[in-house]
Length: 462
Image (cartoon, rainbow, N blue to C red):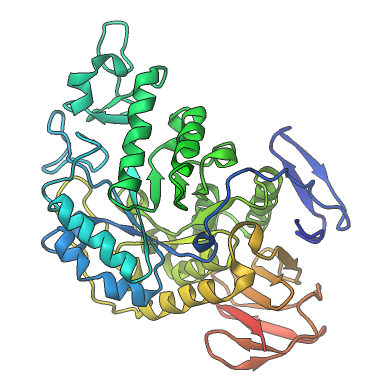
């Protein structure tokens, strides 16, 4: 059950999205409990870090075999779930760039020959499992390539305009939209998903533009996949609560991501982060999971690297994605501070040198996520309890507490040095140790703290 102290802010504002109205609540009133959704998460989901694999750009060869050599390094990094961007053959008709988009799928049962063979991929899956990691692949259920197997075998499975031409969603001219009013298409897609779980031993799927596919299809698909008797993980590229009711374990924290970008750029403050967390509490039940991130393949290629968008706040925002409730994401190259936009439709390559010593930061963060039970995702995690300060627009301080552990975090989410006092007291009367420096710390009511621009500390009870 949600603890009654989920959020207590001075002049708390509770955002009720469903009613599209605002109501002011005193610090003693709490957001109404949201009825739990029905998806049951696998035990290994709760303290996992997910890692997005861009096979094409990961190595000079851009193959599964070359990527396989990185598995021990990723295990050492603390990765739990490997998410592979689409591994299927890419369409040629209307192709963008020299190699095309991963998301223009020609054959859902096939393997992109540029990456290797099915046996090569099976080897990666097997070795990842031996190392204790799970493997999911990207499934693009909304659309296919224009020269896909399905478009020749089942032309009636596609959305068409008044002239009979297939429809491309948005401005994605290299793909054709599927029509989920066709029962045969639904059966085909569910059988395809079952194949990758049963025959290839995958552990789930990241589902591209999941909100563009009817929710009742995903509900039906998850029900069928659950019958296979294997715990799986389903991630929706969407921010739509209903998708997690019966089908998905997690979705994207897009809104949180944009707020973190805006805070780093000076156009938003901690108040906006407060409002997001309150809104999430009002619309998403406690047993749902948001995937938190500072970058991914879309952000990197189209909107800029995390360094372009967040500047000197990169490490701060990265740490925040690990201590907020949810599941943190690391994208290919993020763990070494790779600071260049990767080409999306052509061959490119990640520079794996780590001049900023980012790898050690991410190792510490993944270990914290793994070992601090208060940071578990979903209903197993501890609630966030805001500690107010005399610099509330810049300082985001909070505790997360369960029966055996107390975490206290304080973040300066501003480009200016902040000297402040705590006006809240939930962090007091506890001996702590600074997680990164291992230095003991205790706090008093009248104590003043000074944090440098973007400085943060994460404390655990001793």
